[in-house]
Image (cartoon, rainbow, N blue to C red; front, side, top):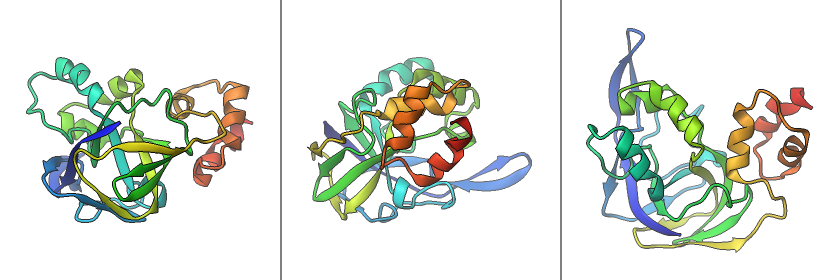
Length: 210
């Protein structure tokens, strides 16, 4: 897996339900390396720190391999890397095989897979339609957030190299699917609850399904 693009956002103002709001989802490729901090990416814009950034969502990775699918759905958009609000566009990232808890070397940083991205209305703002939310869920390729175990720099061309594979086999894709299932399969739910890398607040929300 290789870094295709490093992306940073700027603050963008938009109208939502008659009120002005801001978002940092409008990210663009940059030529410089990104510095991954424990809680966020240096020089990136994070407006809503309740739902973005922090230890479990310090940096967002999305697969370049998914872009052709979305370009076909939205050919009218002005396409570039960073369209999904990702800090790092990664070639070869596969949520169906990437386990939650996997540890990777990324540039000079050490990162750990924490949770998939859940789409919100701001992705709809980015794409010009809220229809993209259901399409994003159905496509089942959400990308992943990572924790920063060791801070460091990452640049275009760096590789995402597996250092330690989680013994718990829950994949990022299974995590994502579980969130949207009305009926939670017991075996998958047990795998989810027993994974030490799944954020605690997520486990708390899923206790009612046990």
